Amino acid sequence: MTTTATKGKASAPAKIILFGEHFVVYGNPAILASINRRITVSARKGKEGKVTIRSDIAAGEFEGSTFRLIEGANARATLEPIYFAARQVLVSRKQPAGTGLEIEMSSDIPYGVGLGSSAAALVATIAAVEELLGKTDRKKICESAIEAERIIHKNSSGADCYVSTYGGMIFYSRGEGYKKVESKSDLFMVIGNTGIKHNTGELVSSVRRLKEANQMAFQGLMAQSKDICNQALNALNSGNVDHLGMLMNENQLLLERLGVTHEKADELIDIARSSGALGAKITGAGGGGAIIALAASKQDSERVAAGIKAAGYSAFEIEIDSKGLVVN
Ligand code: PMV
Image (cartoon, rainbow, N blue to C red; front, side, top):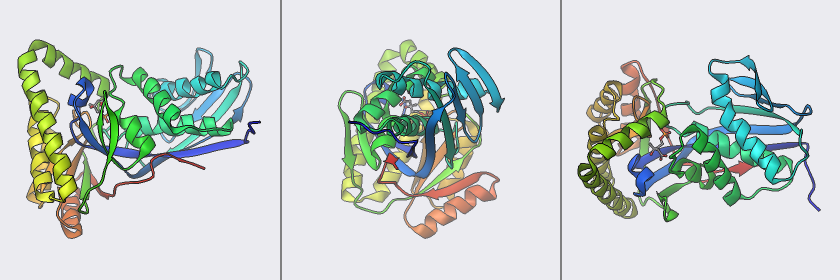
């Protein structure tokens, strides 16, 4: 017999894409890692027919197709995928129609800048509701999160949900799934945040248009990106961080060719490099968002973060998270 709890709680990590964003949408490999920033979600049974969701940035109540704003700009659009994901669990677990839920989320992940906050929110929400109903299954949680993420952008590669669910560093491709990657050397990494929120769906569509307008050139970029990912895998396995940094810079050149970079991201990348980073690039969809820089030592990464902060932007050092989804 399955027992049900009065509360389900789960947390899931943010992520960085070290190599291969955008090209991963078309079946190429990408290297990603989950990082030590998390979103925590708790779920309880709520009032009949109502699903209430409260996060740090928005709150609202769904009842069927109606939405009641509690607070926050763009609350409905922000919360709808979470609602969809929670409803999906209720349906798949054959809960009576009209089962209400109260979902609370708190997060230390900057959102809308390519650090995987929406994927982490979906993974943690699905896990919390599953836990409330008495059973969780990582594979199913990951698949449901990808399905819900496709409401946000329909061509999602699924990479964000995989890394947030399973944690650590992964080599991922749509066709072949993921395999875990271990770095032989410590990776000292810094995130710089332009503060400019991006729309992943729009950026993915702009890359698609570019691809359709020039298939040959795009295939050339795909081949280069794949080669960079394979070289990066070797560099990680052998602990060659200098080469890894160089490959990040090469990857950034490809992102420039895709037109997804942004003057503020370029500025942060320049600051990171001139402050001693081995390499720096956009992480995620681009169009502003966040950049990631790799340094040779803790002192160097502190210097890179200080350089970015001195220019008036936010920056923080990160560590790779090995846990992924945690249900408690
Ligand atoms: O939403 P972001 O910024 O984390 O970007 C997702 C990464 C892309 O490769 C651009 C899209 C995808 O689905 O993999």
